[in-house]
Image (cartoon, rainbow over all chains, first blue to last red; front, side, top):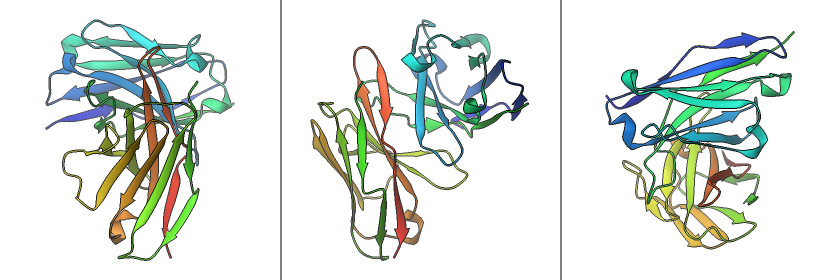
Amino acid sequence: QVQLVQSGAEVRRPGASVKVSCKASGYTFSGYYIHWVRQAPGQGLEWMGRINPNSGGTNYAQKFQDRVTMTRDTSITTAYMDLSSLTSDDTAVYYCARDPGSPFYAFDLWGQGTMVIVSS
Amino acid sequence: EIVMTQSPATLSVSPGERATLSCRASQSVSSNLAWYQQKPGQAPRLLIYGASTRATGIPARFSGSGSGTEFTLTISSLQSEDFALYYCQQYNNWPPLYTFGQGTKLEIK
């Protein structure tokens, strides 16, 4: 079954870091970019960045450039998103999503989302 | 940075009628435009990519059009399951950048 399965909900204190995982199955992991998109409560979708699972190369949105790190482990077909220096504004559902690249440049498969709550 | 503006913010339409949702880019994005549907508590679902190509399994009542800066998503005959949030998303080649619109809520009239 083609799917992305994310890790469970997390609660962090302000200033801490969080690492969310995204396990891919049912397709060739190295053949599709993995993107991370977040959605704050009641808000819209916000693109954070992407990783090329084949090369490990990353591109980050400028807003997150200084505190996000995206990695992958091809041996277990899993992508990771690490976000540091958390504030309450980072409280959101974090999604991973697959992008086939050209000619799509769109996200055709999504994980179920991981709720991250930042609270003191 | 390219800004995507969707209109209207909320659209009220009766079942069986046509819905037309708009998305405008602050500069040309060619045909690198996608549409998503999102229901409460669910991840978004890809409807349209390349401005006008339906994704796998998407019913023919969904259609996309436009290029450059003006795009439209049309739902020809609304079904009960179509009432949801809709987002447009653009892709910029370099630097790689993906931007979403703020969304249109399609509600039952």
